[in-house]
Image (tube, rainbow, N blue to C red; front, side, top):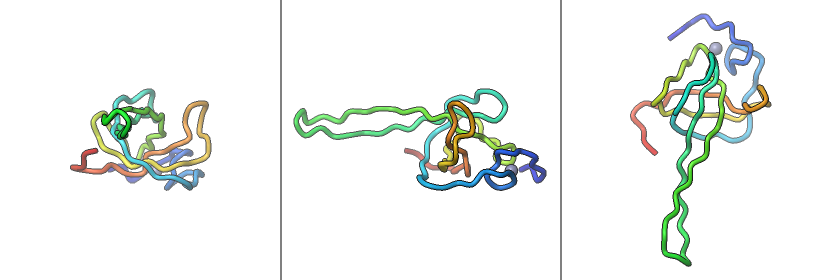
Length: 100
Ligand SMILES: [Zn+2]
């Protein structure tokens, strides 16, 4: 845990407010210093074919210095304003011992 946080895009210590939807997913890649790629797996049933189809979606999210999520972590995400070209989400917590 880091107590000091000078991240301007941190939802706790910076000027970013979270709103809207909350999701969770798994960190599959950390790109750059404060960005992670979170993958969500969703399964959908198609009655017509009696089959389950699995799809994944990837979301680029801000990873504040005080949270510091790593690849393999299950995390909670919250929607924010657009933080960069690709990011409009931020990691709000690391969820321990939870699976999708
Ligand atoms: Zn912070």
